[in-house]
Image 1 (cartoon, rainbow, N blue to C red):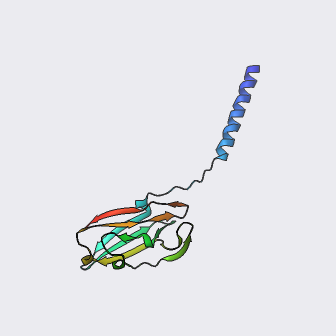
Image 2: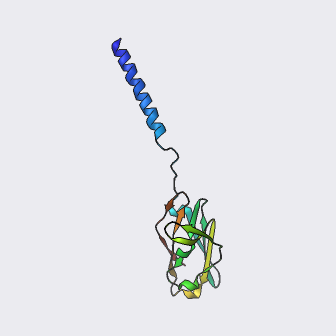
Length: 138
């Protein structure tokens, strides 16, 4: 009988302890997309231009000033999306693009058919991705 009471008490304590532990742990941790899912990069060729577009997932944004085509001059890249100004804790006042980013440049600016595009973005929930570089072969 005494053993049954002790066993029941131990089980009650264990159950109570588990409930307290479970409720003490955060259950709403944000999950983050892989950068390729958060910032879907695509390109299109016209007769004279290369057009770059990013579909930005909800809750994410790109830093416009980090978008670069490494084989062309900075001035050759023209943005067609409208950025918004924001104050960033680390970068100060900067321009970001949400939902859709777009830029284009003249194909004649390229010296070869392979080029690399660099960009950087963040999740509004608090994760900033390291800079990403993607190689594109036309």
